[in-house]
Image 1 (cartoon, helix red, strand yellow):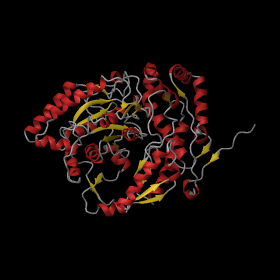
Image 2 (tube, helix red, strand yellow; image 1 turned 135 degrees about the vertical axis):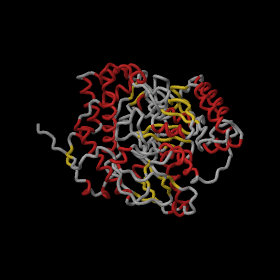
Image 3 (cartoon, rainbow, N blue to C red; image 1 turned 90 degrees about the vertical axis):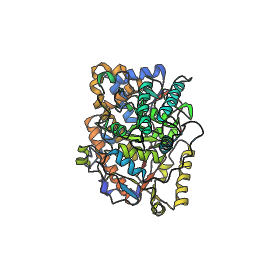
Image 4 (tube, rainbow, N blue to C red; image 1 turned 60 degrees about the horizontal axis):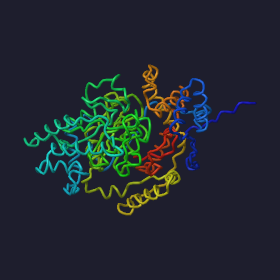
Length: 534
């Protein structure tokens, strides 16, 4: 029997994008729980049977065909690249090297006038400027708010079923932080608009003196925390008060938020459903009204997915825009630290504080200037009226429930009818290849970070779904990784072509409305859309 002839891709510049037809992915993954899940993990980790099983799974999902049996002519793109961009209208440059307090103050000046009209329940769903107004007018103090938060955390933790939104929480430390902030207000010298604002930090970002476990049972024993991560230090400089370390999907290797180690942070709007992940705790805390914002990490939807499923705002920052020093996932080419917030303006204020590339990224990535929108510009209506929104209709509607895409389409129609935005049809080729390249990229980079601990005997201390993911990631070869980076260059080309026609690309954030907290399914093969790009 003769061998199959390799598939050859056309050079990306030669692809007729207008002739591309959308193909809904047919992805296959096991749906397991209990003994069957434990047996599956044992098979995946078996030296011989595991190799056979991963080979079957990759073949069933076209990974082998895409990465091993295809000639890809493009050069690899090992790190994201910033394409040349024209200057934007209606934005203000903040400056990468500017003090975060100064940046936040500048961003504050770009927001419309504030009206204090909070929820009738004490501090519930207050926004950052609501707290700032209340502190400055003597309505309340950070210490009083801290007492309410401590009581609420204890109440949520003692519920049946419990809501373990935090992995590490120290009520005494929170009171001390709040007392210091209250004193600053009494003395009339708050640091910034963020002084006294309570923010939670995902458990894969260092926040001294708390440990960083990545929601494992052991990572704090092999990696100590000596100081704040850069993004946390910037927030602390602005006077932010840190609630604690928020729950997450173990090591960020999943999109449900399921965590057997500390319990699963349930969706506050429906406690029998997941928050989504991996930034499950941050999303649950903001969605429950306990804090106005939180900081998560995102390499494949880990901020956007839980934000969507919990009904809050999640901003996935551009790669390299935030300094990842001090995060467990600071060595990859997809992960970023990003805000989850109760409103767009809160996300803008927090982003203004944490943003700023690390020095090496400025040299190698050459990012465009750090800027935020000017929401008080008299030209806003005309700017919005000129915005062109890209919509790939077949992809937009490829969801599990038509209510998802119909609701999103209603939102786009409102933008068009109220502000005059235009919807432009676009085509984004090779989406299945994009998903595959992403899984291989983030998976291989994660496995590289964790493999020394995996080989040193920590394998059995990971949860079952983490072990399954690592077994899959460990099966990817150097050829798979290089092929994925070649696909990354192709995908960047297609998106750059789309952005020549439109200003933003809109899709539903997830293809599922929510998920019941029951059995496990491999999140790396699960089909979902998680895209909202500009």
